[in-house]
Image 1 (cartoon, rainbow, N blue to C red):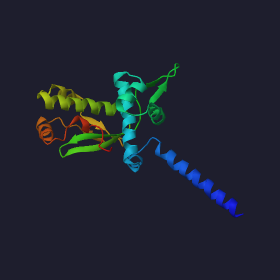
Image 2: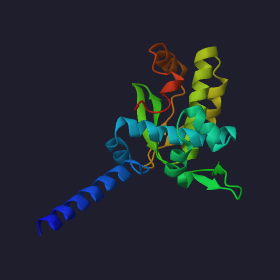
Image 3: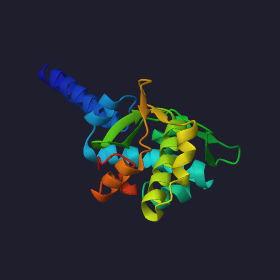
Image 4: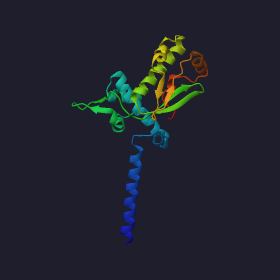
Length: 191
């Protein structure tokens, strides 16, 4: 009878270990789930979102984008499954939009702030804003920022809260000289 109890405990322990390992490789749906992951898993998830964004923006294959980012394409296919569509020829392409969780940095008057978004369109808009900010900081030409002053002045986070984009060049100059606005800051500094 001792053997059967011991065998049952061992089987239960194996199941528990497999379940814990599988949970590490599940796409996070909330910021709480994201930050509960290890730094390595957070970095992996950021890479998955980055690969899918690269596929969409540059119209490259999953394999090519994954190699550029430095992640296994099979991991991207598994974790980013909801953002991908498989063609008849077996190749993956990024859907037009997705709802993958992204932790992104946004400049505020106090420095950078991390926001959570689940809308690829909002992430793309924030990326264009970052690009306009970088062009302004490099050239002093604010014409790229003017596009945002007309109609797209805010970004919505995952909870629907609108966050105002900084368009004041004096504030951007101050943040830029403090080193807070490097383009590498766009994705959250988790890894």
